[in-house]
Image (cartoon, rainbow, N blue to C red; front, side):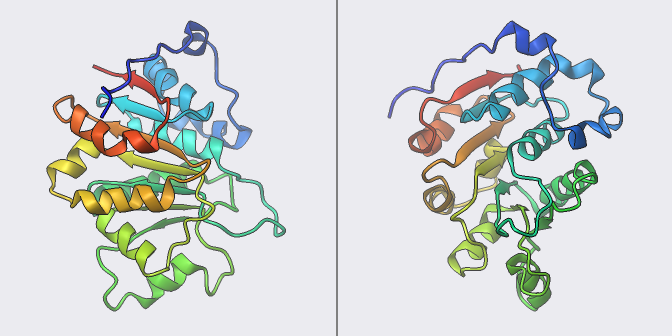
Length: 233
């Protein structure tokens, strides 16, 4: 297994100029309070919106907002009944509580994008027929554009055929070190990568700490050719 890739410095221009974000994303930007964190904001968001695979190491203040900015910028948010209904972004979180938080952030930030639907996997699918129906879009005719959940619940959705992975454009792991610390089966994580990170799927992996970095790279390296590695330490 090769060593983790070296950090690739982003252009100094990217740290001083605004990103060309969609107007809908910028509408409520004053609520994000990013003014004091622009260097971190650009360092993390810029390579993602450029379409690179990204390994992000460090806590990154407001990281979930940064990641959601990147996702909403990358996915198709146009309102059109002619567009196929497909899951475009899959976010893997360490816990249900964090996944629920990410869902709330996504809904708030996509408030000016009425066509964007966000779904959070429940703690379990026992007696949760309504949640399965929502994920499959059986009643509304539209599946969620963004799905977030823990590794175990996401894996259940995939292997049971509830979540179609063919059109997923972005696979995002937030808190990968926390995910591994919590003892999630690495075969499940590997299965998610194998089912989702195919073709042109962009992969973003964020970890707060340094101590698991080589273990993380061993797990994800085959699915992230030539990634950009960014730091916040």
